[in-house]
Amino acid sequence: MINFLDLKAINAQYADELKSACARVIDSGWFIMGKELETFEQAFADYCGVKHTIGVANGLDALILTIRAWKELGKLHSGDEIIVPANTYIASILAITENDLVPVLVEPDEHTFNLTAEGIAAAITPKTKAILPVHLYGQIAPMTEIMALAEAHQLLVLEDCAQAHGAAIAGKRVGSWGNAGGFSFYPGKNLGALGDAGAITTNDDELATAVKALRNYGSLVKYENLYQGVNSRLDEIQAAMLSVKLAYLDGETARRRMIAKRYLAEINHPHITLPRWERDEEHVFHLFVIRTQERSALKQYLADKGIQTVIHYPIAPHKQACYRAIKHEALPVTEKIHQQVLSLPIDPVMTDEQISYVIESINQFKINNVN
Ligand SMILES: *Cc1c(COP(=O)(O)O)cnc(C)c1O
Image (cartoon, rainbow, N blue to C red):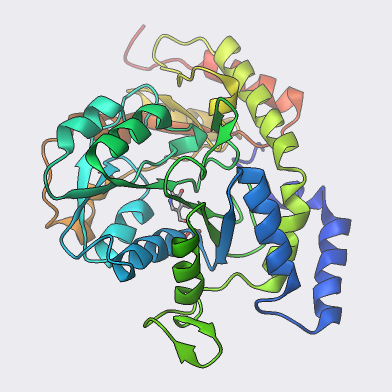
């Protein structure tokens, strides 16, 4: 059986370190907003190349609280439009609607699955106040062009970095391009906690201070409340787990890239379209996503061979029951992507033999109705 992602095996590599870090927190008797959080926040800020990291409870809150902070600071207002890819995971869009702003869904490039500068430019209206690019599947969006557009139109940029820890263009990593970046450390993400966790990265002192208050009841000084905040803190045990795993992130990314390169070089099937990327540093392969019109047959065939695959995502956000009322143009590219994508196992602990077996199995896939 080849698991899509073997979390048990991934964390087992670091079990001794994780257990001793956990014991250190238990022995300290301090569980919320302490030294472990400060240490991780500093390490992750250094990793991303930014001034501030603010830990929060999860990736959705990282996005929600950044937009909320911009509202508190008077930079965004209810009803403002935010441009977001139509094919993203629902969380990117929830963060906008949760704040009473309007998501403007834009079609991605079908080969990179990411927004393009042309697509964004065509969607800008006088009401547009921000862009929320998503580095989907682990590939950085075209940030050089996006930042130029944002500057020309005076738009804020919030990067959704939940799938792309460490992806970069010219050495500049995700989370350091926009005005802020939102990260998830959900267990299955490239940098995963052993529970829920998230963070905001930014170089903006004012934003960092506002988010720090918002995550903790709107308070910076105990029992003094600046904002009607929430409770969204990254606890000491998860911060300690993340500090252990951050040290291994680049090694795991290198392994993911190696698997992706083998898939790209060795999968050869007339009915399968492989993903595209330009340079290694731009993609950290959270997912390796192929497209095929024979998706359900291929998925079943691989399952029969003991190979687990996943669809990211089966239903487009604008087709979800919760967004029935959302206004959007026709979205044929997004709909095609949702009908055709299939994610292959890309797990840093896969063996070379397992990778070969996935490749051979796919290359031998026969389509019933076609010769
Ligand atoms: C996982 C994810 C999120 C949300 O992160 P959580 O920690 O699960 O709340 C947001 N955006 C994208 C693109 C994601 O993949």
